[in-house]
Amino acid sequence: MVRWSQSERSVIADLWSKINVEEIGPQSLARVLIVYPWTQRYFGKFGNLNSVAAILGNPLVSAHGIVVLNSLDLAVKNLDSIKTTYSNLSELHCEILNVDPDNFRLFADCLTIVVATKFGADFSPEIQATWQKFLAVVVAALSSRYF
Image 1: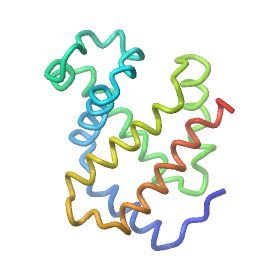
Image 2: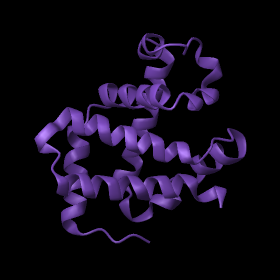
Image 3: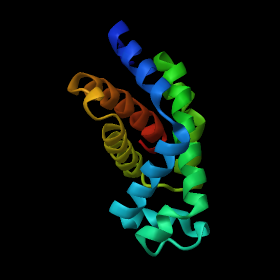
């Protein structure tokens, strides 16, 4: 179980309150699909993903990016039980969707880059460290059914 200081709890809640899910979610998922093109294999039903422009303009990519980022709200609200909170989602991705669990880390990395780009100097090294700790816990929870 991860221990969160009051400061970390505050940083996570404050940063999360500033994130526009409809903006950051699509940008983060698009970045994953562009930078790591092999991840596209999980999105065969999304249509044309053959170019950067196609990915950025794909409404299904945008919609799924919003869904993925909205799911982080569960973790923010359940910091002390993230693994339990994501148990069903982990099972879905492992047992049914057969998603490579490393993709969770890739998404977390791309999300961090998008957030850093959006907030600039307000995304200080201290805030980034807490954010990355938070995302590492989420990634571990999503990957828990694989091991």
